[in-house]
Image (cartoon, rainbow, N blue to C red; front, side, top):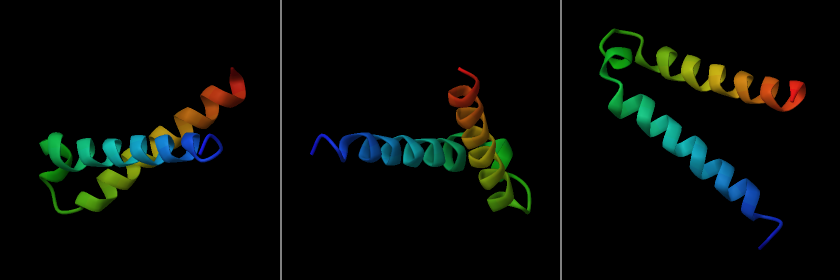
Length: 56
């Protein structure tokens, strides 16, 4: 279980970010392209995390 724990926690964190963007930020869901706003937020967060790890 210790080997799987980081991946399980990462999945849970990603799921919570998705829920926050989809349900709790109404401005991003007010328009016609709601999925693009959600995917943009998730992609931006992923890029931020990669840069944080790569650049220390």
